[in-house]
Length: 323
Image (cartoon, rainbow, N blue to C red; front, side, top):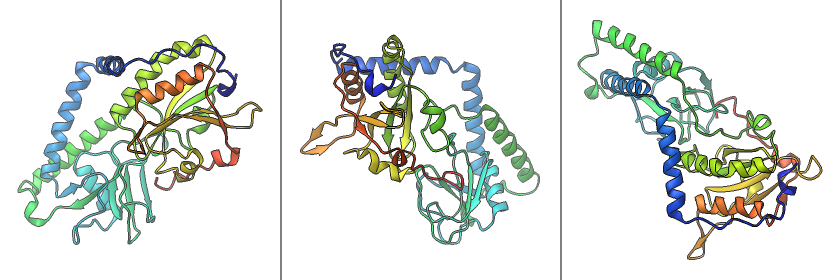
């Protein structure tokens, strides 16, 4: 049944202390680490070392994620040179986004942690003015004095071959997201169950947040199964999905909601929001305790759901074109 009508009258479990929550998070983290074999670790470390060496020898440089763009005179002017620059540092370029859009850094940039909703890696933005993005790092030429002495002749050819090999190996291994992102491209699949726990934040999910959410999902899974419910866990980037930020109206971010995609009538979405603690009158971001309280409140039959007009819930931002 729908999550908003399945709370029942079970007694809410007593909240566990922070130490126990931390212990469970560490337990999930340890399990995650155990799934990475020594062979994969060695390959990853070797690839990182190769990329560091390639970056040192390259005539190009990757700036910090979230940087506005290249210093004057160090911009990369063409698509071909942008791809060559990224490959020279052993970084995967495909799929690529090539267009003009003021909401991204101008000229050449790269995303190294793609998601299902935002798979593009290399970005080339021909707009004259750009905007920094936390998931994109501008790629620039190095100043002449910063270029490696190993840049010419056979050394350059060898570096190019090594970079292509590293990029190919990285592409073959592929990213392994710990938790799916809710977006227009994934919403049909992710919202197909009885309900969803949606973690709301601005920008990409961090690894510690993913581990925290996985720990809670593992702990609560048997209780959903006892009720015959399928509750999916996911995260939502409200920086990308700006229209949905007003729908859920969280007092602070990160936040969390329990979302019933269909509601009582089958076409009446509703959500229950986590309660934020306050410090000096200011709402604070939620942590594991507030999310656990939200889940226990629902399971105890006391959660309050707010109905959302279906059109507002489906106001997804267009992601193809470079978001």
